[in-house]
Length: 132
Length: 132
DNA sequence: CGAATTACTTGCAATATGCAAGTTAAAAGA
DNA sequence: TCTTTTAACTTGCATATTGCAAGTAATTCG
Image (cartoon, rainbow over all chains, first blue to last red):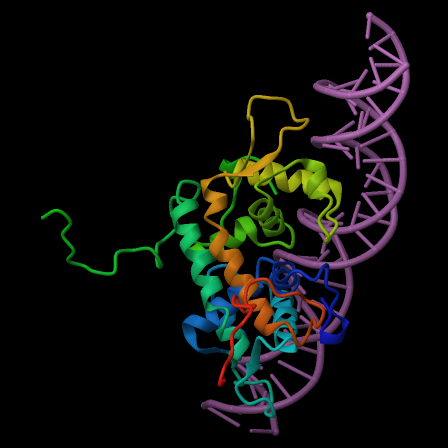
């Protein structure tokens, strides 16, 4: 996991493979998820997520996601403290990926993970009557 | 990476996190991609993909993806030889995830990976004239 | 000006990945 | 039928990544 975008090595010319070269791990898309739901987050706010990422992994992922232009600092020139992370245009464009992954999980993992909550596929109307 | 679906440990109740608990690595979605484009593939046919997965990793992933119901054997009762892998309903339902990841990569990774090919966002019409 | 607090870094053990072989059983050829 | 191939893995080991528990440096607060 280099921090220099020039040093990235791509496994193939396939876009799916290339996306996984950047995002194919257990933590990167969770960081993106948290920024999608909170707008901006500081380093220690990321640590409050229920998955409990280790601090060294978080620092490495934040640095890498910054280097490839998926996230950025609120003020890129200011010091780190209280300088929250945000999504770039590229990071914001990952929303459909998160949504489709979330929707798939809700349908196809619920038998394996009965405690999982639903946030994508739940009925949007509270008062819908089918075949009234 | 257990092979027993009862042994899976989930990091949280979040569907995105849960999806990544199953698919969050560099290889699983490439196996799913290859089955989406070829329909069915034998063990050695997977090895022909340009990313060159190692044989032990391939065997482990095929076993795991089978255990969680994303892929299956063409004939579950027959011997392994010439008994190709296929997508289950669950695996087929991952297509939107692959498509959104591919589309994102084509737009947002092309500056980092200039050799990447386009298969999702390319113009569908061969004779389109804007501002004729 | 000293104590907290934030944002990391470091060291090390555990786990996962990758490479190169080796093994096993079905199937094809003699 | 009896090798010989070959497909489908497994194994051993080196390297890389992850995870945990500390430690550190720079702010900021009292």
